[in-house]
Length: 318
Image 1 (cartoon, rainbow, N blue to C red):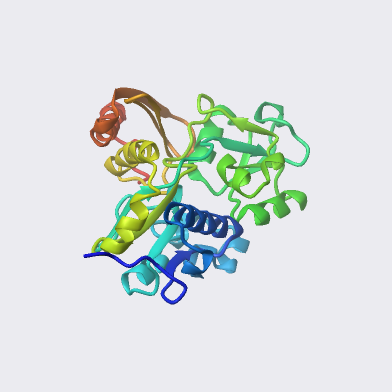
Image 2 (image 1 turned 120 degrees about the vertical axis):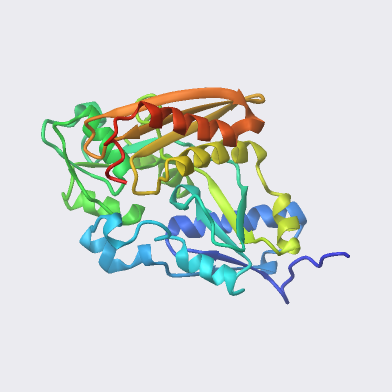
């Protein structure tokens, strides 16, 4: 049976958060679908959904994510809209995504991955090494704070939440001397110039799936599956799936000090992983190489390897 494509009369509804970066990502998915299927812009509509993580009172108070429910904080309401049929697909920053999806949903379409690195952002300081002793550095990422505490235990690390624009305003107001953002987000917003430098993965391994955009759908929707198959990036899928398998085996979330990065060289996948204590007093890292098709098992194997090396109390904070 031939499946009818979306049209101005029955547009495909694309669900997203309302931040500038989230909207950019939703519009990019629309652009890719238009190009892949020769469809007009009017065949799609972007539906903005307010999520718990965008609540202004949470952002302004700089409350740690773990205090307000980290798993699904940026996705729950969007996934509920997908399940009840209010939207047809959901666009996500993959580094925000829990490793398991609700029953009835699947996440297996990815756009080509952007820059995976962290960006050092400061009004007046050029690099992490140039930060003076005791400088205040703000970050909402427990992973980044743990990595910084490991490398620069002299710094004063504070909670620092909000979208890119909110965090830049906080820097201008002197709340902190520096912060870290994802280079991918700055590139997508045309704000790469705001980064004083990019931090190489050898110095700070990035968050799982950083720089990747994922598209979630209902499992029982063959029409949407056919549309998304045309824009899926297989290489990004191999990399993200390996990293998320590593995270899932460690039972990690966006509020867990876990980092990972998979790279492809032909059909060979190289996966690096790191686990840290939140205070940065200990870090364990390792890597694994193998066929890209075995990425899921490689992710699980690497996680088990690090677990076996960790002291008995290493995961007490999980």
